[in-house]
Length: 124
Image (cartoon, rainbow, N blue to C red; front, side, top):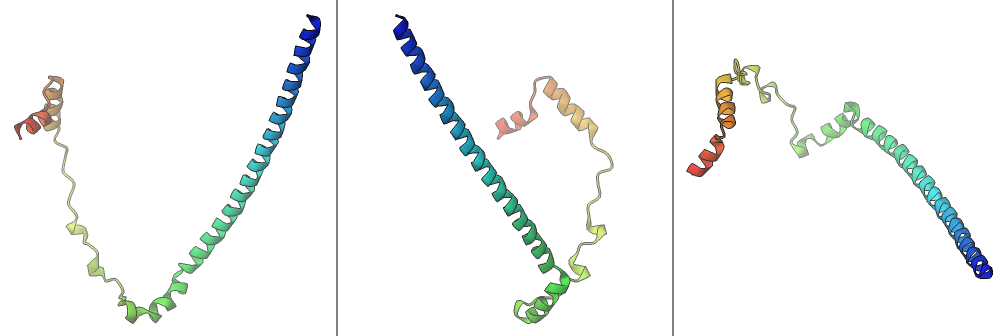
């Protein structure tokens, strides 16, 4: 009885030992993969900041102006005129005050269990 118990204990301890070592190595693999991904992210962020700097340089008017003047006839480019923009007078004015009476009527009818939208849908 004791020999079988000892054999079972040795087997379980060996299985536990193997599983602990397997877990240790899998954790180390995951940690190295995480480190490589973090390095890749850092490298890509550096490349992104370099590309953003290049983009901001290429979009400067001093850099774009010679290209525009060189291709102005081909692309039919013309400067924008003031008349192309809207006037302040053309903007609609805000209403003086919200219609609180209509809102109160709507809320009162909803409290009473009457849905005006449902009535409009059913009428059609």
